[in-house]
Length: 298
Image (cartoon, rainbow, N blue to C red; front, side):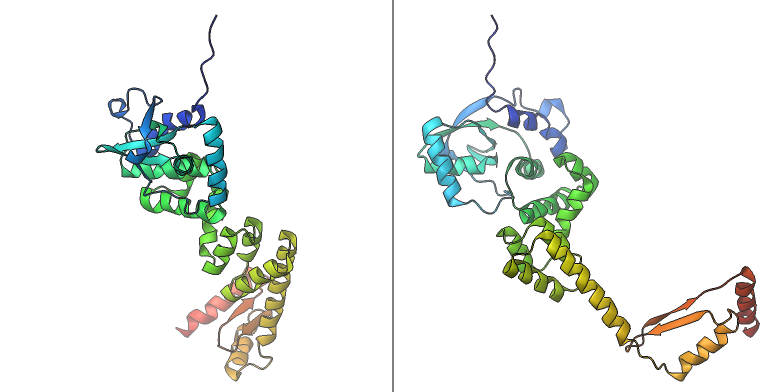
């Protein structure tokens, strides 16, 4: 009668089995003989991951996990790499911290051989896939994979199991003012709210909408509606800024060019002198006639 093997660490084991792909280490001889083996390691010999993408560890959640560990022990081992006679966490820092709170002297761990870049990639990817990071932490993690590991958005999206559009949307959050990013991290506004805010071109408008969302408790749809109203108002306001009376030079241009296009020409100019000329033509002959006139000047 066959016995069923315990599923301890199966999820992380699957991640570790593919980790050489992230670090660029494809040589079989560089892999540990048994990457899924579990070793009991003294907690005092373990240090935190310097590349940890998660910056916030909620104390109450850690204490709840510590209580669970006291009762049931560690269900999922952490993953570490050896540095001299010490160990450095690759993933599982939350479990490590909770174990210290629980008073454990040792903790089960997978030992993985990897360099700094491989460690960065494994830590970030594992967190993105497994931890409840806020949207800004995810965005910063994606940016680190781009900056520190040289990954393109397309390659990164494939590694973390996300659509490229999703990755792009997260990265766009980093273009928001710091105050709005803080509101996302604090859970005051959602990712949907942030996408609506990003539709506004000016930082002042973005901040104003963020403040209104928080103050009035606007839903994402209401925020999107406010954006559309704001953009329409801005468009109308800009049209009103165009003076009805143009300098004589502009009327001369309209008159001369209009001769060749049956006066189907319009000109818009703002107070700072910027604008555009729109010409509508009915045939190739009109364009050819205008070209001949310009060439004859030279």
